[in-house]
Image (tube, rainbow over all chains, first blue to last red; front, top):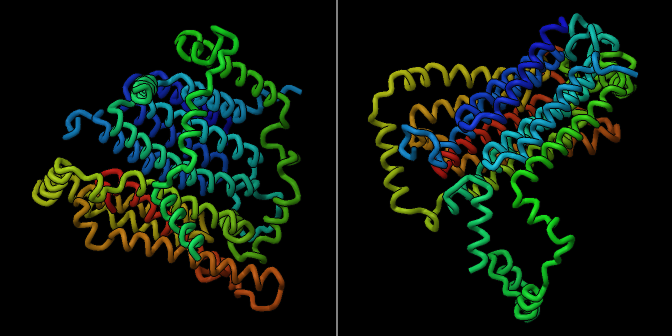
Length: 84
Length: 124
Length: 301
């Protein structure tokens, strides 16, 4: 594995974290956090731990963001739903 | 000793931890606070997993029947992080449930407004 | 006897949250008398929290200082990826060299977390169960916190789940959910042979259940997955885990001679207790993930 790809992915990671912090829109924040988790899964694969990659892809990008979206729906944030 | 150039994984994980901590302190919105907490979690996992990696070795799964410790990377941090990831998702779910209850009671997600309303209620 | 009865009454009242503090008057007086210490005048905590700019500046300063200190520490850490680092010590050599004959698992990580450190994983499964119980405590709807408006909304949801045409979601759910669940089962059953295991496979099965529930509604899910099934599966899996590990703790650790046969490494039926333990953990995680979803949407599993 080449160091160049890893450094690019890590820069993406920091950029995603900063974007989550700076955006005002909660919906965008949760979607960017999903992307953060997916990049993290690729990094686990590059660090030679495939167990972690599968778990992180299923948990971080799947279940975690579903829970965040359901909470956003419950707190009347998403427009177009009944609560919105 | 000057290893900042080679230790880029650790450096990035420290920076991510700082960003998550800043998120936790500065954001007023509770959901943003919990996203910051998750970022702190993943930063710690990244640090741990980077400690176990060794250049040029393969994942700790038996390949070609080679039983030799100098052929695989360190499996211990992977095991530790695996338990950590699943605990972090349960903590996230629990805190989001608390957020929903707070919203039901106070009608807002802003930390300052919740503190203000609760202070007024207590003062009465 | 009378004292015991009153103790039980006390305990029951305490569990129900109705315990009356005996010295209530004294307690209230002492609480109201307690004066707020105004140490440092205008530099008190209230002032700092009230002053938005000062608070923001201090938080950023503390975080940046933390990052700076930690970066200087990282600068002095041993080099990344070096085989002679102190983290790569004799424990790792032991796990890698005698792991296969001692646990029988090809995936060293599975052998580690489900054999050498199985009690750690047991505690973690308990953490998951406790988390979902806390969410039940917070969000489950019963007759005390259930308004008519919510009942009407629930009825509306069920009606739309049954009658609305959502072809993409419904056809996609019907085609994809079995495949996702099948893949999850594959990941669980091959936990000791390939990457994966109980945690990842359980999460994948949970994601498949969530997809099906969001496409067809929870009324259809409740035909085969109720709260009773959920508690039964979770408790049975935790007890099975506990029994398996107790057995190997009492026999294997003392070398009495009743060890589980390890089989040939590489076969699916090998490596002792790792396969049943993986199945237990996977079922607990799948139920937990679906339980979170169901409680977050409707307040009932």
